[in-house]
Structures are given as structure tokens and as C-alpha cells.
Image 1 (cartoon, rainbow, N blue to C red):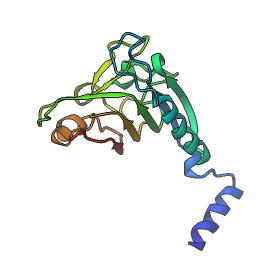
Image 2 (tube, rainbow, N blue to C red; image 1 turned 90 degrees about the vertical axis):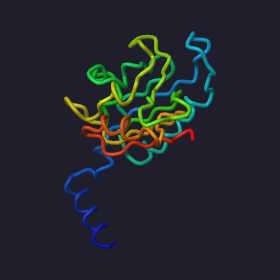
Image 3 (tube, rainbow, N blue to C red; image 1 turned 135 degrees about the vertical axis):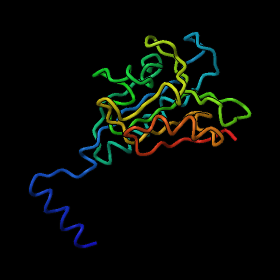
Image 4 (spheres, helix red, strand yellow; image 1 turned 120 degrees about the vertical axis):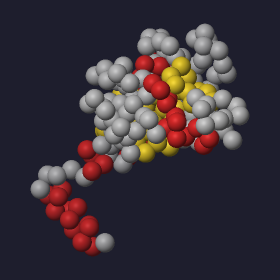
Length: 179
């Protein structure tokens, strides 16, 4: 432990930032679905939850790239080949946090789809099929860690078909099943 602390101190003196300072992150949160014409229900806490995520990551020394809320979170942010816009997209940073609706089939099967559902003012459609439309970490993408705080988008029954294909450079995805 003492050696690790000493090494960290030497690196700081030499001007080498800690790994956390080199990591970049972005957040996307959708609270308003009904008023924007996307159906519902609304998720009134989503934007605040993303704010809490940013608080802890800023405190840890990570650098924020983008922070998108409600209509500024687009379905295209999660689709391969459409999410590399310099101003955003889930594949642009090292870490991406999403809080909003997810959709899954109930009951899930091995061939079931897992979906992210936004309510964007551009980048339509709002629905993204994770297994067939998302690829993270390829073609210049940087995403290494995805935190998807949405209902359903990680069904255990379909995890091989829906979640293995998107892993090009992605190291870890965190989600939760509905069942």
C-alpha cells in the first residue's frame, strides 16, 4: 500500500495525472415522455439521478464530455455509426450513464430484444434495439463502461444475443433485468 501511494505521489510530481483524470464521461437522462408526445409514463427523477452520477464522477476527478437531458437524448446516440457526433453520443466518452426508459419482451426468451427508449427532438427513431443496432468501442468509439439505469434492457434470457454483439471495445455494461 505504501509503495502504491509513493508511486502515485511520484507520478503527480512528474505531471502524470491519475487514471481517473484521464477518463471522460457523459450522461443522458430522460424524465419527460408524455408532454413530448412519446407516451409514458414520465420518469420525474431521471434528470436528478444523472445529476447525482455527475456529482460523484466529478468528485472522483473524471472529466465530463456531455450532459444531455430529455429531448436532447436521441435514439441515434445509441446506434452504431450514428453516435460519433463530436457533441455527443454514447460511444464518444470512456464512461456513459443513461437513465430513462428501457423496454424488453415479457416473458424474455433467448431471441428477445432489449431496447433503449428515448424521447429525442432529433435522431429518430427513439427506439434502439441493443443487440442489432448498438456497437460500442469500434470505429473510433471510446466507450469502455456503460451504466444503463432503465427498466428491462438487460434480460438474462437474451443476454448472449443482445449484449455480446455490442461489445467491440466495451469492457463492462451494468444494467438490471426485470425478472
